[in-house]
Length: 259
Image 1 (tube, rainbow, N blue to C red):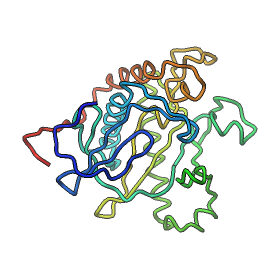
Image 2 (cartoon, one colour; image 1 turned 60 degrees about the vertical axis):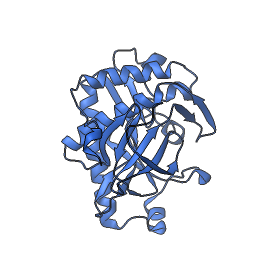
Image 3 (cartoon, rainbow, N blue to C red; image 1 turned 120 degrees about the vertical axis):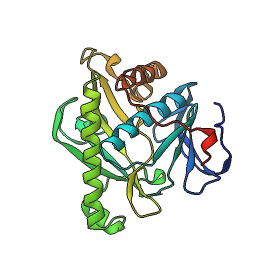
Image 4 (spheres, helix red, strand yellow; image 1 turned 180 degrees about the vertical axis):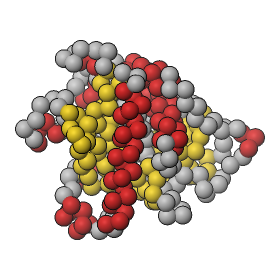
């Protein structure tokens, strides 16, 4: 993948699917989306050329959608093929999962059927720690960890539900059913809570409403890797193609502007 047309500083963090770099301006970091798909908490990895660019483009458009809806995110602009500029955040070690329909691990934990609509959407919190297996947090466990004040807990849930609602509505108009999604949040330098990480088929389930409910082909997300269905990049291309129909234009970096 091409290096963006800006001066990169040190590598700050490398996750399963992204790398975070410092830039010449401490107010901004550069994120590289890797051509890697992972499953089983990172124990299974597959290199898929083109995946990083697609996730970057999808994320940029969906961050733009949420910004237009009044939700603060870390996204600033695209800076090349598979790269974006973002605000550095002090990330909260939580995975916030919104479930609009029953799928995935929920089917093993509750007497519930695949695809059952959950109204209101179910919000689950998980402690973000690979070594511990990202365990589920009850309210009592969350209080024990002292990760959030009660006020911040309410703010986080409010923002997560607003994001889910805006995305669910926009994607439904594209015949994409947002089954569930994982969100991550952090505090910026001024203390504002912002949505971070990414918004892509890597961290949500998307079912194609144009396909039969019983067809494996309806999955347009990372379940294609988890379930050995193949065609992951093609599925992500289809998601990106449909999202382009929303007419969103994420800001792109102008090298003449500097940072």
